[in-house]
Amino acid sequence: ECLERGWTGLGYKTVAFEEAWSRYSGLRHSHFVNSATAGLHLAFRVLGEANGWRRGDEVISSPLTFVSTNHAILYEGLVPVFADVDESLCLDPVSVESKITDRTRAVCFVGLGGNPGRWHDVLEICRRRGLVAVLDAAHMAGTWVDCRHVGHDADVAVFSFQAVKNLPTADSGMVCFSSSEHDAAARRWTWLGINKDTYTRTLGSGAYKWLYDVEHVGFKYHGNSIMAAMGLVGLKYLETDNERRREISGWYDQDLGDDQAISRVPMSPGCTPSRHLYQILVENRDELVVALNERGIFPGVHYRDNTLYPMYAYGAGTCPKARLASERVVSLPLHLRLSREDVERVACALRELVAR
Ligand SMILES: *Cc1c(COP(=O)(O)O)cnc(C)c1O
Image (cartoon, rainbow, N blue to C red):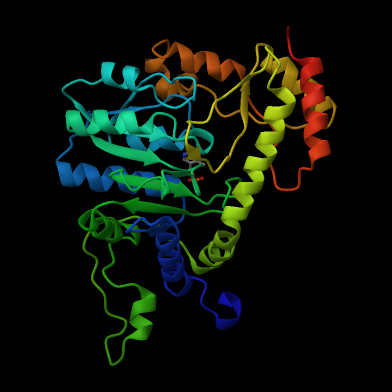
């Protein structure tokens, strides 16, 4: 439709996808952007401006994440302060609370693999200590807790629809602020600070359709109609896709559950997770992955402890559980074409190759 109509840019399908995402998730404000990285940056820009944050102010974050989470904090001149993870591989509320200083402004919680972990305890700390709560929900499209989609209680939740996520559109994301003022502020940053988009101008009538003002030095962060069209179709299948992911995860549970050498990362009880990842911890991770590769099985690693990278090295040694997980974690194959037999084959290879 986009190609035939000749409208592939902002407007047209992007608005429809924002509305569809809000209807699906129940999140009031959905703003479609070209990546979750852009969405996270907007989150820190808008919340920082609204709350008068200064350079050097601190955001408590996880070292066990895709670097986007922490880069977005740095983009705004803020300092990621790393707290440790718990058995869910998400932020541990006890560690979070111990990292709060008088410069702490926000906590950024990552729902690893679609797992809400102890988000509610972290949120409670944020509310009690007057901190902004940011949810990096890049893995959480379709994670439900108590019949509500995750993100409704965050100050902002950011979803990724990047190529390898569970609602893939090649590249895009959704930034969902709880406040309409913050949502409006973010929209002023998303397209270079231009106050009227091209699509709105084509819909208008009369002279001066070409006329717009530039109110500030904004970014080129908006999503386009091709990605939105993919998202609109993908969204129709998200629930059945995630259901399939949970079914496959159940097979792994059955096949691996009794093996002491394979420690399965637990999903937070009572949630219906997107199951973006199925993660285990093993002692011989590096050799195991090589050996699995030799058998044509290709697991992933999410993630390396970010304090191993030079820009976050100041945090090295502060989060021992995250470091250990970074050395042991494996994400097992989890895609929609896996059969029961495939899972058996992976489980069988794992049992054989894992260190005992
Ligand atoms: C993928 C990912 C991002 C970034 O998403 P993009 O849409 O690729 O920018 C951020 N955080 C986490 C945890 C991710 O996995």
